[in-house]
Amino acid sequence: MPVFEVMKQIIMEIKDLPEDAVTMDASFADDLEADSLDVVEMLMLLEEKYDITIPEEAAEEMKTVRDAVEYIENLLADK
Image (cartoon, rainbow, N blue to C red; front, side, top):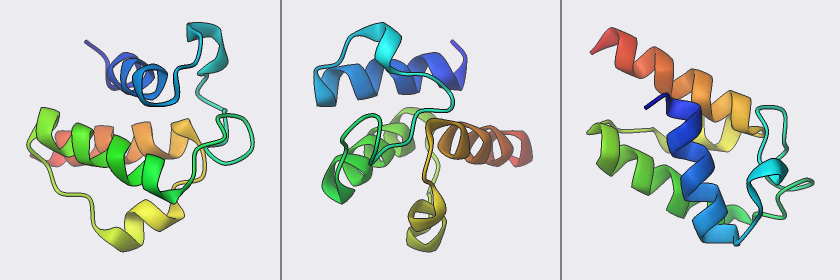
């Protein structure tokens, strides 16, 4: 399953949002109304799923779903 699809499922579950609300360009704060704790929870679930580690500094730079998906895809490509 593509990283975006996995992320979309996680976001929908955590934020109780409809599928069409989660797009690649959705802002965590503005569009998804996700606070920093929500984002940390999402990233922790992704770390578990893909057996990766996302540094705190990198997580702080992630403002949109695309930012997170591309970061994770790059980590997986380097594995």
